[in-house]
Image 1 (cartoon, rainbow, N blue to C red):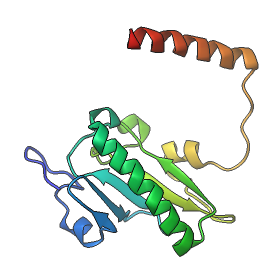
Image 2 (image 1 turned 30 degrees about the vertical axis):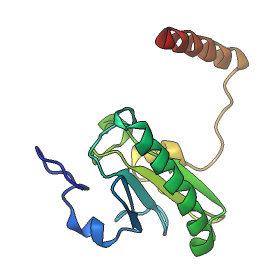
Image 3 (image 1 turned 180 degrees about the vertical axis):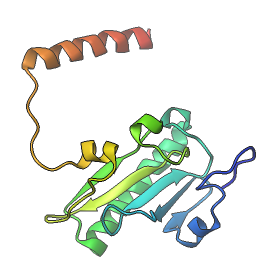
Image 4 (image 1 turned 60 degrees about the horizontal axis):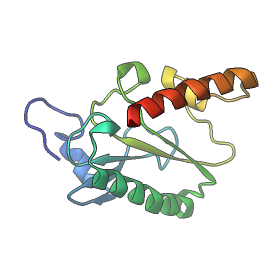
Length: 153
């Protein structure tokens, strides 16, 4: 992994290469050094980009294909029954390394997740949430559909 202007915790960290599960010219996958549960993997493009919008389509395809393959490995290795798949974009969303990376977190009944980090409290918090009123959800859907149509025309 490389980047010229500034240091990157992924591009410039030789230890990541040493713990790579898979690496080719496009994508790398490695265990995070701060796992939510054992088997928590990060998948990221070799090319330094900060947001998913910056990926080439071929990079996205390869990231997703690797994610699917690694889910099978995590099911066998850690008896995963389900997965959290997520990425954070921007500091306000919890992105601490400005190099796009997808979290693949194997889950099984009884694991605890994480509750210390605010964005993850939202993503992984236990318990139920109140259901939004149908009209509120429909209004959000209408507003987004209009904006989506404006974006593609």
